[in-house]
Amino acid sequence: MFIIKSKADYDFYVKADKLACGKNYRKPKLVGDDIWKFQRILRKAEYYTNCKKSLISKLYLKYIQYRYHKISICLGFTIPLNVFGPGLCIAHRGTIVINKNVRVGENCRIHACTNIGSNRDETSAPQIGNNVYIGPGAKIFGNITIADDIAIGANSVVNKSFYEKGISIAGVPAKKINNKGTNGILLSNKESFNSNNSKIATKMEQSPLIVLK
Image (cartoon, rainbow, N blue to C red; front, side, top):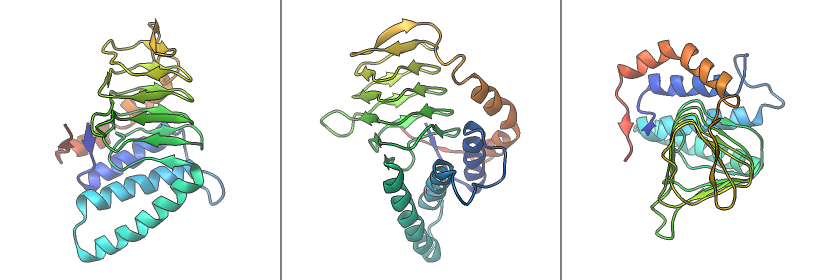
């Protein structure tokens, strides 16, 4: 999984999130677009935390962190920095709680009332692949891996790894229910992500990212 390490990376993440959220205008509206505003602040906080080390930047980061904390409380989100890859789409406001050691790949769509947590050791947390759909009320926890293109059904409890790509899982505890995966759920997002971000991705390749293990 990757984190923002340059201005080019930051621009890529912001544009990828915009595409994933289905926004076709330049900036969030004054009234509404609260989740998009949150995601933009999230990416800015990640950029300044990871890349900016000057005294002025650190002072500005305090202001960004204040805004991030305030809008997080308003929307019900507990989402640490450097968890989600580019192309994040938070579907609705509502409780979302995520452990700081979780890592999620690109083009994730996540719904409200979800919890992604660790084992009791507070360090072994889920590692989730690309193009994953997380339905409302899903609980995902432990030292587990979720492969690419998996759809996790509403109110599922996921406490074991699923390595097969492109499947749907659901239930308590979760189990495989079909081979549909995120086809038909994230299809338009994936197509937009792949087709519209190729030029931006080229810029990212020129500036290596940090790989989190």
